[in-house]
Length: 329
Image 1 (cartoon, helix red, strand yellow):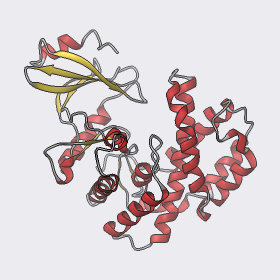
Image 2 (cartoon, one colour):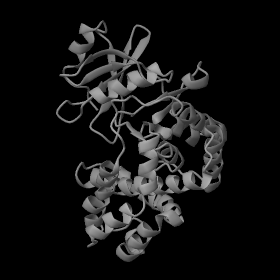
Image 3 (spheres, one colour):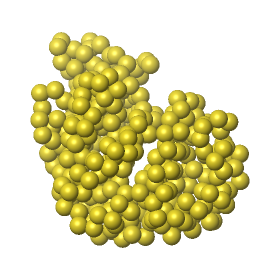
Image 4 (cartoon, one colour):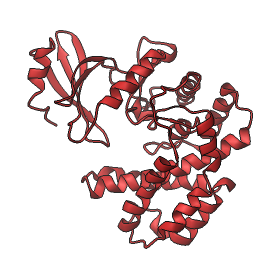
């Protein structure tokens, strides 16, 4: 992964001339990341090609998080015309790999991540953020029809698919309109950094929040606890969901659980479409290996009575051989 040709001049113009540039990571977007080292200091260079990525939402949400006391990468320097941002370096300790290596206690770190969401929801979202409304929820689940269904050789009915979702998410939409919270939309173990030497809200560094909206308070919780990239046991999911409900002071536990499952199903159906799109449009094959896990989470969601219309649609339209294992799709 080579840095953009413009990176050395950009760095030099902001006091980082002669710094070394090392590949760090990419993600499911067109953004790439590099670590910059210079005389004992480090930073992260984000390369977000302006013809493919708009970095302004990232900067806006980062400022909003910082203003609310949360740990988002601080901007050191930027050139939006070139798509280059130099950001604070949170180090290498991502929650997902740390858990996989057994270096952190799973229950304790999930408790901290849940408590961060509780704190995040206690402060109002920026008024400029759009609402996570029906149009956006629907656009996302339609990715399943646009990408997964054709790849699996399925001829499915679009009209009944939309009708099933419209019969399902009325409560979610009403609660979102009444009491929206800042919703990061990709809050999971690989986007949470463990920051040595920090405590409280500053102990967890937040990444990949540029798509944030004003949404339902269950969305980021289900994103965390139904993680496409790692197995989260039903036991741990139930304990962390109960912790969130208790600490957030949610009175209607049954209604919240219904919203949680509806948004979990919406997110997992979206992910099924996105991961196939990453393979078929972008040539990034690794993501489809996670599809059996996503189907497993979706099965949990569809078992809830609130998802009955969507569950009936899947039973009628998507035979089980087209779900898991991920074979011919």
